[in-house]
Length: 586
Image (tube, rainbow, N blue to C red; front, top):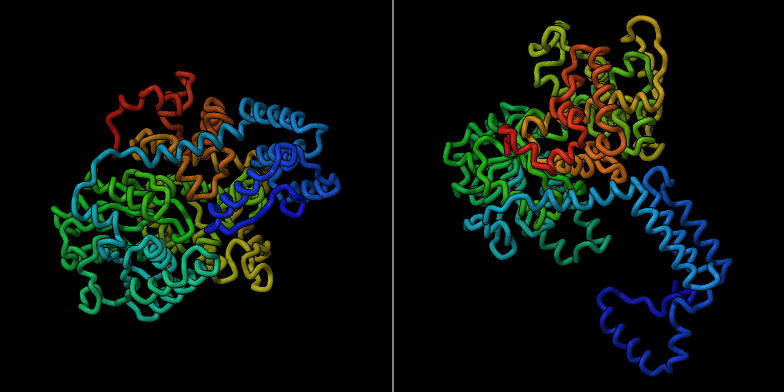
């Protein structure tokens, strides 16, 4: 812009005001004619330069049908201002583009919906925060507040980074010195990157690493002031017995009876975990489910137990949004909460599609990415670790016994279940990117080991699970409906059962936690505005008949009610019809 004389000067962000004063003084010295010639709208611009700039930028934008409609319109508006015979003609083009987007763009409606949904999610609680603990936690730099993080793995270290950036003092705990060392190394690396990217000052980084980060292998040790922590976030692996043991110890060690004792569990019952603390403490316990990597992902599910007080929920929300600068959504305590509960049918049906021969691994992912998701379900499994999902299913008593081959104790008769994903881990050791093999192969020389490469071993392995003759391949539309419609249906059931307070809360969880495209608004908005609830209900009924034994294909009563009244689920909530339910778990 400066090279083309569109702007006069470029300044450092610290010098904006002083520089503006100097240029204002200069402008005062110009006569009216000279000043008018310097106005951007009256300047001549090289058409050759303009054409090159616009062509290069248009290549970088997502296509209009994949969320880029407004971006392409913005480029056209600027181009019109530069290439039209007069500036006024260019402004007229911009006006036409603006009104077309405002009145006719489904993407625009979805993006505006998402914008307001995020703000609504953070403003739902009205309980005043008056306790001394709350005041200290909301002013960490003034009150020398310690936060305990139990578990120094990728998740725990990411949570620690989030609190360190916000000015809290963190005590990182792991039962092995090696684990602590890896965690400290990761935290140091990220903080040093923050300095390089000018996110924090070098002095602040030095203070974080030298004074604000402590480590220990024993929460009872007097080598750190762990007993004085006002927040403790447990972030160990998904094992109920281990988590209960940790909370039992926290009940003994943490001095302040109003300290927040929180679990980062992604699937386990918060009531069961916190049952190990004294009854008086339970109102200060909840789930604080971060998403990996925790220092990057903005979403936090705040999970309310049957004992969590309104002030505790509000305090965690305030810490999440105001101090950690993340998006907090309050949800109820059900299996998988909101995000992962909806994810179970999504990932499960993706594997069934493979087993049936309806699509290959790459074809499933390609259809979902083309839909707009950041990555496909099978790439997501490789990224997160296929072993994580397997251990969750094993903990739930669904995965078969690897020695006897017998189904898990909680796998009910007639329940639809595939062993394919479990066997991929237990028989082939294909846990994902970390081992350079999962649903895909990975090569450290190709995209630093992150680029999926179709695997012949996996294709042959899947073929062994196929029953009967090869059926007709699915279209991309059929893949999307097969794996996303049960996800949406589960969202309706979550609302129906009172584990989420609104459709927009579910949408925010999927926008910020699961890579749902913002230009589709979220799964519930998509069902309302693009799919149509009547069509959704009809397809679910067809699939429920075709695939008996999967409860997530059984249509939600809330969905049926919306269709019967010919209203969207958003309208259902706007009219307050949900208030007639007495099932809220929040």
